[in-house]
Length: 90
Image (cartoon, rainbow, N blue to C red; front, top):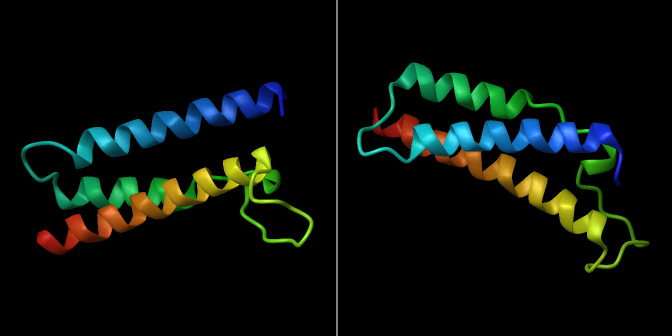
């Protein structure tokens, strides 16, 4: 898990999530075009195969990789739902 590509992917994913939060949590609603753009970026953001959530009987719930997969999955889902709710307000 200490692959330099993982570090780069983590950096890019956190950068995207930071952008999502910056636009979503402002005092004024963001323009609908910005919502659509960030929603598309979040949906299209590539997740490496080893970080995609997969349920197998061989993993325990305290496996660090399973936890990381769940965090990645839940953050992408959270962003999609956030933008859906923001889009409905417009």
